[in-house]
Length: 251
Length: 373
Image (tube, rainbow over the protein chains, first blue to last red):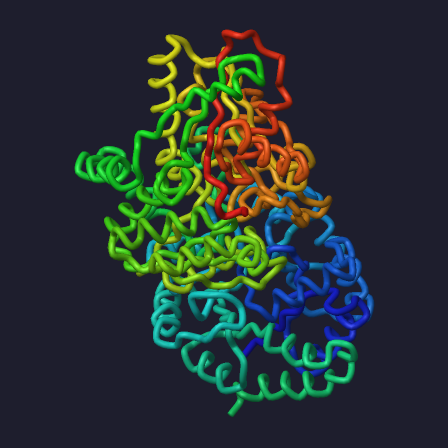
């Protein structure tokens, strides 16, 4: 099982994000997903909304995120890093410039939660130019025809959303089971499931449905948020949580 | 570019994949209802007998004397619910029924759209959840109360700054959580395609009527049409009838404290490419317009296109100017305009003495101001 962990960079500080990334990797996270904080994060639940707000309040910009990823790379981290950003910052900074900077920072792929295939032409063009993958989303509302288009456009894993809603909501297993089944009938590409995974039990169930990986984000932010003025003090708890997530797939 | 989702370079569908099937369904039903005579008959029956159309085109005599030309008000404030919002609400409710939806979610700021959507939902027997920023509930209490009495649920939105844009996001999320049963009755000409086109379509009745009325009363077209707005639903509603008449100046007035045109730039916001108040990184900026309904950082895609192409001219009115216009309109005409509408009135007052006595100005009197007392 692949464990991908999602953090919003700069929440509550850049220093903490770098430490958090290090902790996640040490505890067994296979892939880092690092988010650009955005002012209107429509796909995110309350925990990540607060994370974005805190990060923006302390002045975190997309350029700081690129710098942060560079720092993480300089510490010798060689596994995959995906950069998550809503489309507004990408568009405003300039699509080519943004993708180029992401590549320079050491990013492997982009995750853009608010752009459908029909609007991706330019983004795909620049991702190809710089050799980054652009992750495609499959949802429980996607029919088979749509899933074929999504799988076809995907140059990497398929990001499968476990529920109808936002990050931190509840997983809907019956619909997720059906969705994974249909995707598997279409493609051999890896399926990572994200949104709403809060516990090793959730992770176990999702792997049993046939997913190749899980993506966990707000469950981690929820831990350090409890002690937001001294988030470092929660790193041990986060580390234990990540270990349990990893182990859940073994038993 | 001949993509129907775009107005020039503006518009599009910048949404999570979740919404793809919902937008396709909406596009399909929207094309159908335009040709569906049964739908059209029911829509116009409700517009006339429930909402109170056609609305009068009022010759504002004292205002005319004050400004120095012939000023007419298109009296959308007289509609049931107190604003033009009911036009779009009734149209979209009938669409929702055709799609078999049971529940309406919507956003409101000043509360006018929330009231209209709830009324329309009740007429059609649907439930209505109205998302409203906590800051707006506080300053537009009367409308929040009205929504409850009319059968809607007011759902307070604390995210972000607790204002209109936050309510839009929260309504969008509520829609995503239950797409099969829910329709998002968006209140302005904003959001992903086809919403901006749908709202403009149901609002165009304002201009269609005004055009016939002014030709009847004056035998000529107006020199200027003035409307306020943020997304642009009332402005597009009246402007559309005059777009091809290049001699008719189309004037749009935004809030100075939320001036998406004056201080904004092209960007992506809440589903579409449009003008938006944003920083260099695409983060929308905080807005502080006293008029909750105009306190939105983006302008709709069609309006953005019309401004970019030069067809529509934009101006801004400040909170202070608006409050003065509010007081003055009471004394001058015995009318109580919404603070939003007062933005258009500010621009009208600024033009005192600039026109010939025979020139005709139409001001879209988009809503009434009881809510703002």
